[in-house]
Image (cartoon, rainbow, N blue to C red; front, top):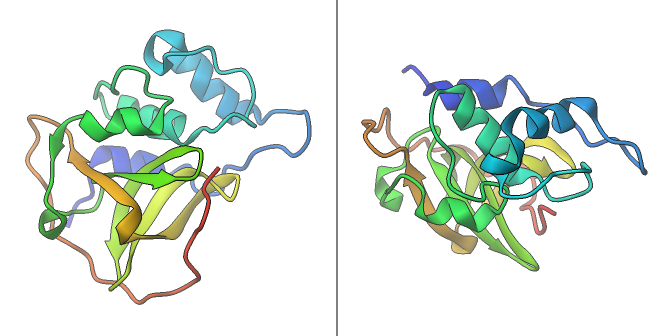
Length: 166
């Protein structure tokens, strides 16, 4: 099965990590500079600012798609594209989650009985694949006008659930 181009772009960024302390990772800051405030909705000036929406916007933009207005805000992705039923998920689906202090956005790569396996930015301050409880998911989306490629991917439970992606 071929993965969608935005998920391929996301996988290529696995391991990118915030720079600890007051310094900023030049790669993350470069994503913000490339997209600019017009796409992100704000001037992004530090990798200590939540950047899951920046990561998602960078990946979909690389695939030639338009991110939602104010793409930096995770919950802005909850109305992007078209909705998907939980039973119709496929690798690359955009998942939006509730969390204390805001939201989180990332890409579906699979699931187990209780959690989605999510490729996202700002997960433990890096681009990683992590498990997030299905009950926290508030939206499942796919780019409008594009056919869904694939079907749900069943995975073993694996590591502990993420509790805060900030």
